[in-house]
Every structure is written in C-alpha cells, then in structure tokens.
Amino acid sequence: MGHKIAGILFDIGGVLVALDGVPSMAKLLGVEPQHEALHAMWIASPSVVAHETGKIDAAAFAAGVVADLGLPVTAERFLHDFCNWPKGLLPGALQLLDEIPDTYHVAALSNTSAVHWDKIRAMGLVDRFDRTYLSHQIGCLKPATEAFLVALEGMGLSPSDVLFLDDGLRNIDAALKLGMHAHVARGPEEARRVLAQYGVVRSSAGA
Image (cartoon, rainbow, N blue to C red; front, side, top):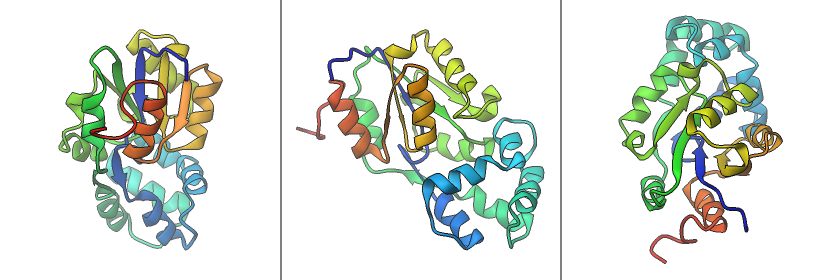
C-alpha cells in the first residue's frame, strides 16, 4: 500500500465477534437479511441510539425498540434474544490480534451496549486492545464524526496515521471523510488481507 500507519482501530461486531443481529431482526421484521439496510433501520430507532449511548437502561430500550420498529414480540422476549446476539469469537480473531506487532497502537471503536459488552468481555478480546472506545461509554455512535474523534484523540494519532476496519459501509465512508485509511472487513480473514496490504501481518496465518 505504501502507507505507513501507526494505529489500527477495529470495529468488533462482524469483524472479530459473530453477531446474530441482522438475521434476528430480519426474521422479526419479515424482510431480507440485508446488512446495510437493517443497520440503517436499527440506528434510526431513537431507543437504540439512547441505549447504545448509555442514556437508558435495557428494559426501557427493549420496550422502545419494540414500539419504534413495530416488532411482533414482547419487550421481554426481544431483550432475551438481544442479550444472545453475541455468539462468540469469529475463527482466527485472537490469532490475528496477537500477530499485530506491539509497535502499533491497537484500539476498538464499537457501537455496543453494556449488555453485549459484558458478553464480549468474557471472550478474551479486551486485553488485546490498548484502549476500547464503546458507544455506551463515550456517549456517541458511529458513523458520527464525534465517535471517531474521541478514538483518535485517545490514541493520540492523526487520522492519516490510523487504519480503521469495520463491517459497515456507512462507518467506512465516515472514516474516509476524516482522512483515515478505512476498509470493509467482514471477519478476521478479510481483516488479515487488509492488514497484510499495509505490511502489518502476513497474508495468511503461519505463512
């Protein structure tokens, strides 16, 4: 690539952790499981934004989402299913993070909730990051510019020094507009290919 980067900023869900959100919501809404369309619908819900920026609790969030999106389930049922969206690490996630040399500042910027983060913490990811910037803690959501600026300030790096990996096109577009290097990566293998292009890791594990 010819670009020398100093930091790598990862999205978590869909890049390193398997999330069942898209198929679950598609089933509830009776629509095709199309990632970008469902993501846009999801963050258009005021209750989602309030919860994932730490402003309302899980019970209020569940009731609000059911009302906002007209879901054909009770709030209790939705919350039960929502809590189980994080399914586990995607194959190769920890190995990929472990291969990134210590010379890089590695951080995470994730739209998430306290409920999901508790499950993700238990997967062993957290100690692989120098810092984590989580929407329910920083009070803002991607693709808002503010979310990226919080992460960049915390990393102490300029946008052109940072590579951002996310599974959502809207988030990638927002990062590119800020001057970051940004690529769609849906899973550790796609992330590896991008990181290899920047000379961070080898193109295949064990190669």
